[in-house]
Length: 193
Image 1: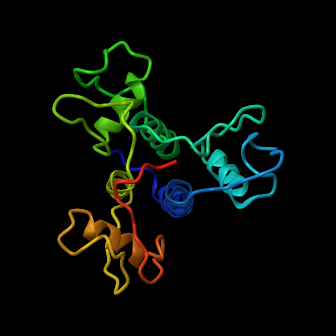
Image 2: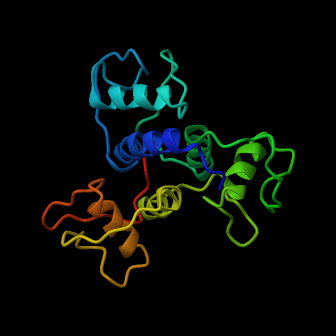
């Protein structure tokens, strides 16, 4: 995909990488009235992370609306978040042909940009924009963005060396994004909320 300028890309990569991982992979339980979103606790760690994501253009803060912290993430929502955060150009993207989404669908510019950047693609001629993203799908998608490498002695008990996401998850552990506890499960097919 198009390279961001060197300094901006490096800074964005590290900050967004950590915040994205925290948002995508951990459940958040909040209470109280929020300044950022009505379902995000005031002064919570999640609120702080959302402010950082807003600063980088990944989300738009809407104080009188819900962030939907407990709703599953769709493929389109993940694509939209990545397109905004990585500042991919929506205007020059070629329109791909997917059987399940019309070329004039209002979501198509985002889908075209994420497809052109080779970060996300379709399945059997379908993009499946409303399909729910699993933890392992999110890891594989984010690995496309950040191109992490590395190995760790730590791991998750449900991700064996022959799992197709083993190397990717190991890279996330080696880079300090995931820190598994002893006998902890990754739950690769769990939905992301």
